[in-house]
Amino acid sequence: MNVSFYIARRYLFSKKSHQAINIISGVAIAGITLATMAMVCTLSVFNGFKMLVADQFTAFDPEIKITAERGKTFFTSDSVVQKIKTSPEVVVATECVEDKVMIQYGGRQVMATIKGVEDNFAQLTTIENVLIGNGTFKLHDNTVDYATPGIELVGQLNCGLYHTMPLEVFAPKRGRKVSMANPASNFRKGHLYASGKTFIVNQPKYDGNYILTSIDFARDIFGRDSCEVNSLELKVVDGVDVDAFKAKIATMLGADYKVQDRYQQQAEIFKIMKIEKLISYIFLSFIMLIACFNVIGSLSMLILDKRRDMETLRSLGANDKLISDIFTIEGSMISIIGAFVGILLGVVLCLLQEYYGIISFGDASGGFIIDHYPVDIVAGDVAVVFITVVVVGLVAMGLPVRYLTKRLLATEAEK
Image 1 (cartoon, helix red, strand yellow):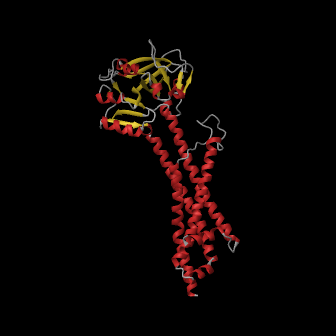
Image 2 (cartoon, helix red, strand yellow):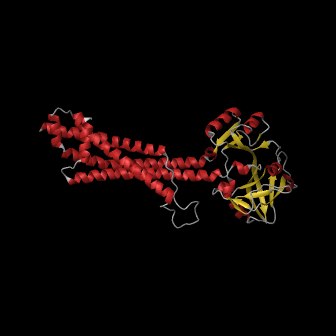
Image 3 (cartoon, one colour):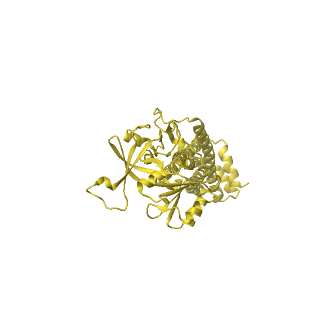
């Protein structure tokens, strides 16, 4: 066994001549443990919120979305697009047409986005999980087209889920001059009837803006050709690597198309969350650095307490580096023990929070999507925390301990 490690281990677990040194050593380990536990819990909470947001937009956004890189629309009659639709990796492919319209109901007017989708949209996403109301999700029947608006849009129009009058939809006609003499001729007009359903995604982008209806209605109101779409949305077969398949079809389509997965479709939200998580990690690393100063104090007192031992070691032939390594290794052992215990406690607390929800959002019952803080333990984050604790400990303690040891040895040599 390495001599420095053996002696450092004996110093760490043996009783010191002064009880205060034992207490300070315990406080040092406790400080690193608590800081490590805080890092694990904080990063896991950020992962939990990320997972929560992902679960919410999953109900509306497809696994893969293909749009035009330039312009608003493209044609699905393209041979490459048809090949992707019939690819064995694709289980559902839905053509979508969407654009801005003005909705009028009972004297109220609001701007909204009509999203026309095919009948297999419910198989493409988990939209039915966020629907409220009676009946089944439907886009049209043999005679009329139905509207499924977001919950906030229902409130803006004050139409309710079962409005007796249809929603009047106005969209500007494309490719013609504006007539000031007859403004009504500048718009296409359509009617959407109540489906008895509304969706709640808990994102204003959707809840206060979108109306789902049939793709035929959307093509008619916007004057689009039968093969013209704003997007082609795909659901892949279970077990298929989404990232790999996305890269494959991006290569097939070329630079004229944009291929996005769910996270890229919500890039702004996840970018903000990533920045917040990074800032929290940096702040907690500084707290860890402060906690390591307790270890420096503990080691400084231990160095003074073990002056006679150092003299004995030098008499036996030990050089200054070996003696310095003893205390450096002990400081590293304190960091590693604190890291292991802190990670263990952090994981246990996160599991308790995940299964029992011991920390809630307070008394605002029903005001949030969930009633307790979400957590998600990611092995990569745990590894980063452990490495951070060890590295910060070595950086914070290495140079001061070596300096104190050399100075004390030099003082003893002068005597």
